[in-house]
Image (cartoon, rainbow, N blue to C red; front, side):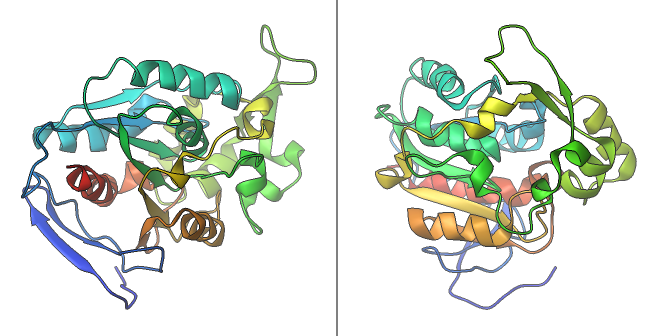
Amino acid sequence: MRRSHGTTVAFAGMLGAAVVASSAAPAPAATGSGPLPCPSPARSRPTVVLVHGAWADTSSWNGEVDALRRAGYDARAVGNPLRDLNGDAATVAGFLKTVTGPIVLVGHSYGGSVITNAAAGIPNVKALVYVDAAAPAVGETTGALSGRGSALGANPGTLYDRAPYAGAPRGAADLYLKRDVFTRDFASDLPKDTAERLWATQRAASTTAFTTPSRAAAWQRIPSWAFVSTGDRIITPSSKLSMAHRARSKVTRFEGGSHLSLISHPGAVTAVIASAVCSVR
């Protein structure tokens, strides 16, 4: 795996070693999954809450949940309804209010938009982690943040299978990624049989999830981390880096990967989550 040059901070722990950048500059590739357990643990260990994105479910986080639990941390992957940003964020916020103690809130893809809104007004959220995710400002929609050159910029008829759903707003529909788009662009670094199984079990996302403007930008007050896979064809690396720079996130560039690096490289993703966990005092 290639590494770019830059200032790094190296961590070592029971999960391995990680290389993480400071501030929002391009960073070396992550190569492992540390630094848990934290060398100077917080008085109360944070709970890690993980929010999946579109065309996925809570099982996307299995690798990260297993690693965090082995290191002695509570990790909860919660269901994201994938209906509309306001309702989805309210659902996640409702869960956050049941958690006692500090929270590290993690979002993948559209889940990044959800945590950006869900964390607003929840003082227990001490860190945000964006994993190949959208991090909208107030008024921005998730659909507008994929970036120039994203596979999602193609003709919608070539990208999605549409289906009606009960209670849908006028004009809204459920979207399923077509098989070739899923395997070629969404899960491009996974074995084909794994990618096809994930395609077959994908959860649909409503069109309104991508068109609802963000009401909040929790990254303005909460420290954030960004994991950026350079091989992502769904949210382009340049778009993710631009959002991370705006949020003043601590950025880790992962050389290669795909939009589903959380599945294909859970150790590298866990390393970044661990850095956020260890920042909580």
